[in-house]
Length: 118
Image 1 (spheres, helix red, strand yellow):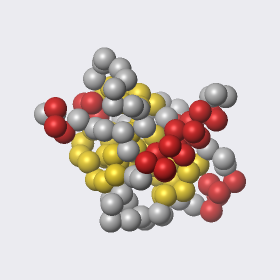
Image 2 (cartoon, one colour):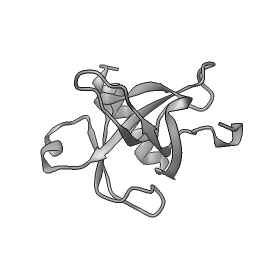
Image 3 (tube, rainbow, N blue to C red):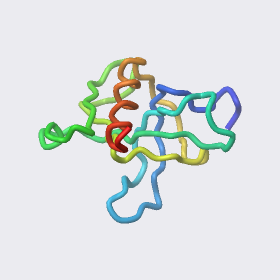
Image 4 (spheres, rainbow, N blue to C red):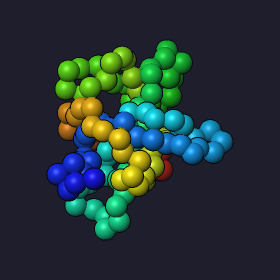
């Protein structure tokens, strides 16, 4: 991956989450990069997977609703599952599909903090 194509905070990328184990997120899914661009020396990024939204998700405080826009590249109403935040290798990133507004990225990061009791 050329340096100019490195995933940046707030970008939405298609990420390969396979192989998965147990209830982990699986297959190729959109994910938002939440790690700070200046943090870390390894070729990794912290991401939060994005899945299709369902009414069932509304009762969980770790799900952040995302509406599709021309900027974020999502094609349907979605949710960022903060409980499934994980650090992934740059090798898992397929291509960038969009970008979230910084306010939404901050909300997702705060929801991850909630999940870990910070």
